[in-house]
Structure formats: C-alpha cells, structure tokens
Length: 102
View 1 (tube, helix red, strand yellow):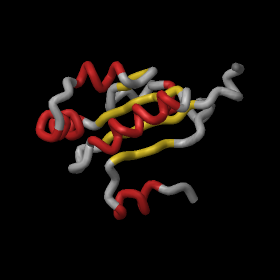
View 2 (cartoon, helix red, strand yellow):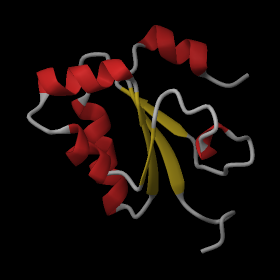
View 3 (cartoon, helix red, strand yellow):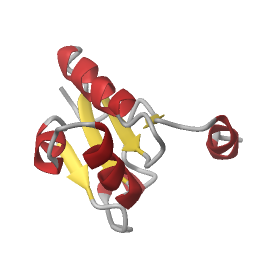
C-alpha cells in the first residue's frame, strides 16, 4: 500500500479520567488493520497507573508508532504526514471544541 493510500490514524491519549477509552480504541484499530500513531500526555501516563494495571510499555506495544509529547519534529507534526485524522481520548467537550478544524 502506498503512503497516500495507507490507513493510519493518530491516537492521542490525554490525562483526563477514562484513559481506557484510548486503550480500547488502539485495540479496535489494530483489529481493523489501521496503523496507529500514539502520543500520550505526561498526565495520561500518571492516569494510566491509577486507572489500569497496564504498564506504559504494554500500551506502547499496542500502537504501531509511539511519539513523545514534546517531540516537535515527530512525523505526525508535519502537514505532509497523511492520516485519516486524529482521535483524542478521553476528551472533554470544551477541549474538543477548541481543537476542531476551521
């Protein structure tokens, strides 16, 4: 599959309560054979420890590619990086309204 036709999605996991939604999304996307590019906030890493028994390494292993939150040179930061979009989970409605395009 060429880069332009590749099915891939950026998954952002925030530190809000409900980190399990992002983890479940990663599982479902893998089943659908969609390449996942994961970025987690530092708060998400802390929340992960409070809400699940999973290690950070286990979460990272469920994504195809993992980026650090402060990596401004990451492939996903480039406008030429083609994706189906970005899923942020969990997301508060106020944050969602601020991040939509347009």
